[in-house]
Length: 205
Image 1: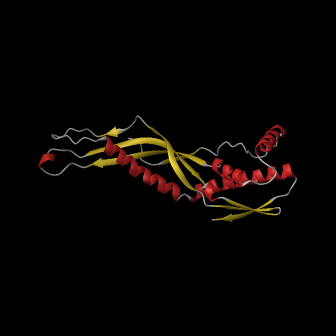
Image 2 (image 1 turned 90 degrees about the vertical axis):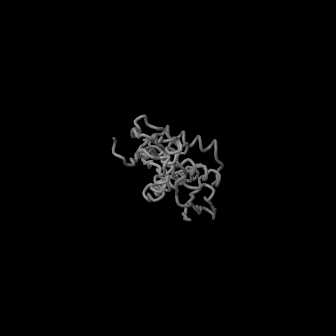
Image 3 (image 1 turned 60 degrees about the vertical axis):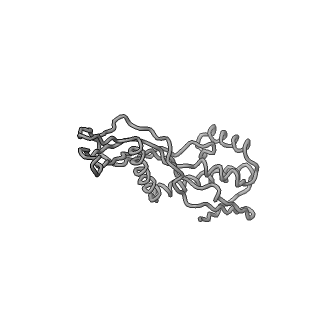
């Protein structure tokens, strides 16, 4: 039986059309071309919210849902045996900013941007391993492990996973920083296109 622990493997940070300015002239030109195609010469809250949506941090995790089905009580359950089982599966946790809470106010060349703290946006892309375990049912009276038992075990394991990500301040800060860096890059590119030296002032919810 494999060691039953939650394994976190960070994969990311994500591909975005507003990439960082590259030292290579060609990459820089492509970034400028896309900005010219998609933005005006002044900051747009719609684009900033789109950037925050693209800045999602995706984290791969591997988990084991383990549970025990106790033998029943009463005459009808005589001879039942306690059963144990575990199910291995993988998924992706998405952390980012609620884009609806992002705000912007322009005061001359100063842009005040308000962003909320990053949070767990959801768990997705589940895939189940073939290497699962269910103890034998050799009691006189059968005590079957049903699909409902397995679904319940996974739900409990997922609740633990959610709590773990929601309390991981390091990952949440990284997700927020991703959004900030991409917004800063957007404003920098915009400054170059409009020949206006925009400055960002950050506010946090």
